[in-house]
Length: 138
Image 1: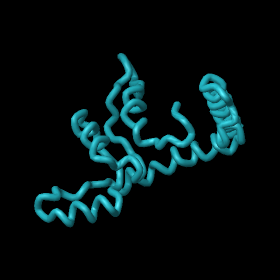
Image 2 (image 1 turned 135 degrees about the horizontal axis):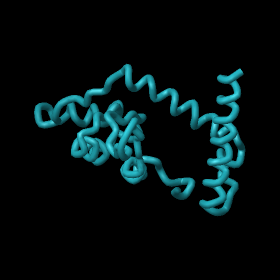
Image 3 (image 1 turned 180 degrees about the vertical axis):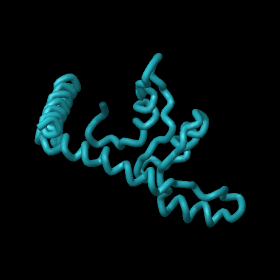
Image 4 (image 1 turned 30 degrees about the vertical axis):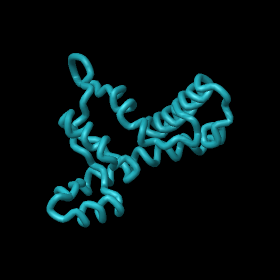
């Protein structure tokens, strides 16, 4: 958790380090096949981290980054690849975040301590999960 005015991009690598992907057997994987993000995460450092770990980056390039790369000519490097089909699946995550923020306490961050804010996130996520679970079983 960061201060409300802090950007999300600096938290990209710390959050990625906490990712655990359970499989049918054995311990969870810590390296996803691909990571989708919006243009805010298209920094050189984030892309280099993903490249070092062998993770496919599904992050479009910002217009100013494209312009700077083109301005450098052949020294600017190759254009960034972005799988459009995988990028559209990012919509699922965005919809969940919007459902979480529909709860005013989460959207406005009224809670004073990180622990109470995190508890609110867990409570709201549980409410969403239960609502979706009852919808699919009935």
